[in-house]
Amino acid sequence: MKRYILTGTPGSGKTSILRWLELAGYLVVEEAATDIIALQQADGVAEPHTRASFIDDIVSLQKHRQMRIADSAEVQFYDRSPICTYALSVWLGFPISVTLAKEMDRIQKEQIYQKQVFFIENLGFCEPTAARKISFQDSLRFEKVHQDTYRSFGYECIRIAPNELAARVAQIERHVLAGSIP
Image (cartoon, rainbow, N blue to C red):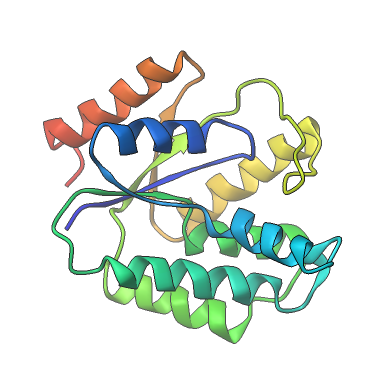
């Protein structure tokens, strides 16, 4: 099974790329962190990222979503992964939880994701949203944390440079369709 990760700094265009891929017929899996933030904010928690359970909530939703389609033979694209959650935990200064460590172990042992990930480069700005409250300068630092984290776990980052949306999607599809990613 081919499970590809889209990663990169907040506001780099991952979700737009994911939408395009979905409309092209690919199976896509939404980012979990944004949904956890939205749910907790709706429940009255102003800053969910400060809660001790934040990382584990994200990991649990990521695992649930991945397991729900585990048997599908279709090409799958994931808007972030537990490796991103690991980077987020480091960024926030949280210790790596038991839940996160177990999920990292599972995805490594079971080779859940392709070892080559699509690293969506920043667009030169970062628009704040209710879930994304990071400055552009911090997003650049976070981008480096992501890249370093993926590399530390043995993943290769295929850089998708800023460009028109159609061109970024075409670059990803060329890699996938050409089979250049084992």
